[in-house]
Structure formats: C-alpha cells, structure tokens
Image (cartoon, rainbow, N blue to C red; front, side):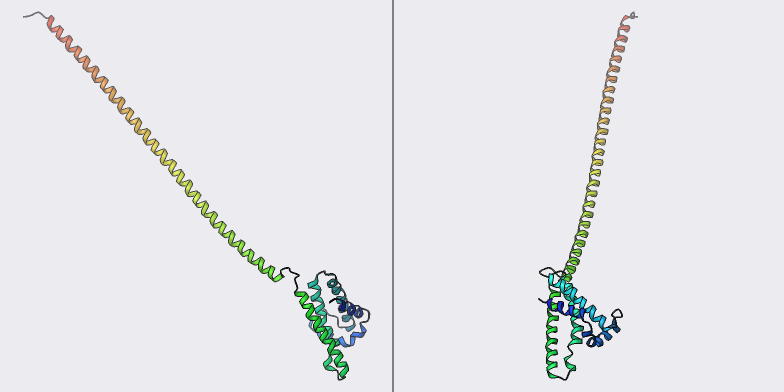
Length: 224
C-alpha cells in the first residue's frame, strides 16, 4: 500500500516529465551544483527520479530489499515535495490549501518510508550485529589469550614435572650406584678377611708342624 503511490507517480514522471520540469528546475539547479553527477536538464532529472520510484516501489511492494528500497523512495520524496508543493509561494488560497495538503501527505509518506527503512522485521539491525560481532571478537580474543596463558602454565608445569622426574631418576640411579659400590666394597673386605684368616691358619699349621718336626729331631740325637 505504501508503494502504490510511488508506482503511479513514478510511471507518470517517466511518461510525462515535461509536466514536472518547470517546478523541478530550482531544485535540479541546486542539486546539480552540489552533486555534479546529477543532470542539469530538469526533464531528464524528473525521468530518472520517476524510474527510481518505479524500481524501488516495485521492490517494496513485493518485499524485496524493503529497507534499501524505502530509503531510495525517501530520497525521491524530499526533492519532489520541494518542487511540486511549494505552497508558501502561491497567493491563491485554494491552490495553497491543495498544495499544503499534498505537502503534508508527502511528509507523512516520508515518515512511513523512514519507519520502513528502520524496520528489521524482527531481525537484529546492522548496527546491533556490528556491535555484537565486535563484542564476540573481543571475547574470543580474551578466551584465546587466557587459553594461551593456561597452556603456557601447563607446559611450564609439565616441564617442571619432567625435570623433577629426571632428577628423581638420577637420584635413584645414584643411590643404586652407591649401594652397589658399598656392597662391592663389603664383599671385597669380607673376601680379603677370609683370605687373610685362611693364610694365618695355614701359617699357624705350618709353624706347628715345623715345631713338631724339630722336637722329633732333637729326641733322636744321642745324649752326651
């Protein structure tokens, strides 16, 4: 319903631009000075405006790109209202009343178009989505930094545990080596003591036998 007025007005402007050219001349001159790409011929500018109203009105009517098409129609309402319904310049009371009524109608249409342009149909707006994406990116960055910090701590703890394990293994190996050396020393001492004891006993036996032999020899010698 909102687009219907623009469809008829746009079609009429495309088919009969000369009807609006005279009234559009001041606005076209002003806009062409501000925006060089706007044609200076009022008839051509009116036809372009009508084509925009037809295209954007059709999109708005079928629900395609409603926000963009509403903005495009709003952009055409402002210059059209300023050129066609300049009620403050006429002295005829009836004509002034008619133009004022059309002016108010266009202002109401402009308000409806702005509402349609701001309507997101229940979906988040672009500004909200941008802010939400920025917040989510900050949260993700914070989580990544926290994860990296935790990972660094975990790696440090793991390295410390590995070092402690290696140190424990080295200490255990040292204790084993010490115990083995002590055992070997004790075994060697015991063997030496045993060997010395055997040698002493053997020497004592040899000495006893020698003494017994000497006694027997002494008995065999003649008396006197």
